[in-house]
Image (cartoon, rainbow over all chains, first blue to last red; front, side, top):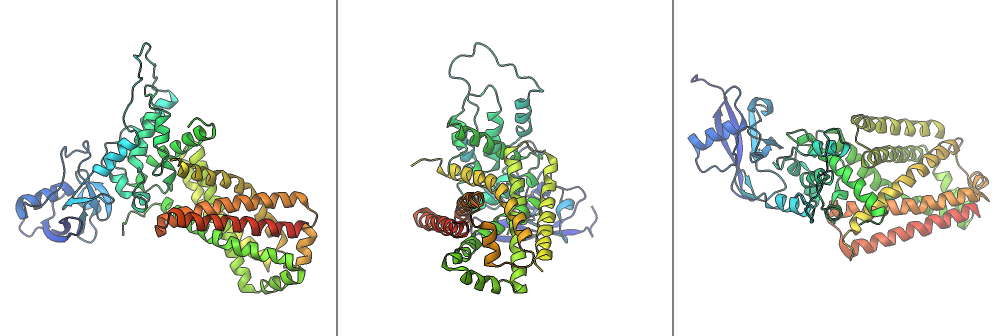
Length: 241
Length: 112
Length: 112
């Protein structure tokens, strides 16, 4: 590498909720990701820097943080595609409690996943006949559209409603519930429909699609939540729940 | 301040909310004015004479525009929430903006 | 206490929105037709007096608008001002009743 290499300035959140930004000068390398850059800081400048990652290839969903104000995976975000005026700002994910530096406590996020009954529930009685599910089945396709979520929390951090109403279950948990409602082998209804329409339920969504804008997998939680609103409305009007 | 406000859906939702609040706060005044009829025609006429001023007419056109934008934006929300999601629904935001402006202008044209 | 009251309020908000969609289109059209040449009590009364269909239409419109605006304001009060609970509900119920009373008495004054 050249000596007169171009440098970039990175402001990184340090400390807990009441922490502050610390600035680092980092060499600019073509095609480096935000994660590469953090690794450089931790290995060569300050080894007390905390941040999460595991797979490095966009499969595990553990490395999300606010990059220049927007939630992104650090492993699949190139520095050159997000840098503004030679500067980068890295903060922990919004709407979640900060543990230290760039690490947040994901507990509220996963608790809501459970609260929305985001867990597959098989039939109580032994299955005698398997439901055939064809790939072109309408319900199967709806489940397909929502199923690839890896719980990275980008949508949850981007959601204005979560920010305004901490009880709101959020896009990820509701999207998960929607994929299970469309699973013919799942037997949690109508309990799941009740679970997604409590005080923090699907009706809180403002359809402003910040989650859609920020999902690294291009999923559409807003569409899933709209599906829930309609399903719960019909069940409520029919007196089923 | 988060900087993820870069989708037109965010602004659609913003306009929907605050046009709604403005209309909701206008309603009591609207109804109180109409109730003036109970006190006699001349009382309501007194108000209507005042309301004939150009500035009031512009304000009224603004309210008509707000009502139209809330109507069209609300139509978009109901379509998304109660029908299947389609990509063309993104255009409904533009239609709401254009339709509301047109309605407000039409009202102004007729008012003068 | 029913745990799904929030959802039911949202549903009432959307159902009233569907009704209002129809009402507001008619109202906007009527408004744009009527505003030509300015308004007077005599002119308004000429259209409304004894028009019971219009009386029913506007009474339903009033109730739908009161329902829709009250629930909408409730959401904004909670999310923006952080104002919820009993005190907010009390004020909002008063707002709802005020709108219904004023609106329907005005309709009565214009139609009867």
